[in-house]
Amino acid sequence: MRARTALIVLVLGAALAGCMTTRPSRFYTLTPASVAGAPADTAGKPGKAAPLGLGPLDMPPYLDRPEIVTRQGDYQVKMAEFDRWAEPLQGMLSTVLADRLGKALQGRREVVELPAHGGVEPYFGVAVSIDRFDADESGRVMLDARWRVYQTGDGHTVFTGRKTITEQGAPPPDYPAIVAAMSQALDDLAKAIAPAVPAPAPSKG
Image (tube, rainbow, N blue to C red):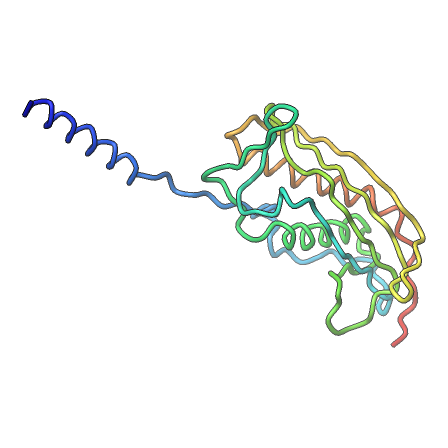
């Protein structure tokens, strides 16, 4: 009996020690460190052209969480236990897409997130709705997004578009490769939106 009791104590102790040992969380951004904080290319940018506004940017609620989300099969999603976004995903998507859209426009105009705070008010804005942005079990990232170019003054729509983008990453749990593929998909989206942006309107101020 004593031997059995001692064995149970040892097993429980080992289980408790296992529970107390957790893997460290890893945090990710959609901007590579090599370009983070790099100055924007403003070559050829008009001096007082009104900027382009970006916003609102909407995404499905299942993505609104710290954990990186991947697909499992047709109807199941998986939340990464230790791999998380370094900041709220919606805000990061808006900031990164604004930067990528500015680069896709080749410096012809600045892109600012809406609502704009100070400076020249945008004459045109781009609203983006993301319907899906995740990776499947093979690591293939899918970005399904719709966008609308509109006049900020009265909300009049001047162009609408939609694109489904795929980029190949690596199967989970290779989350660095998945995040890199997601970053590339945002580049592709910015390049798809750029041709729909009207020529810069002259500044009112």
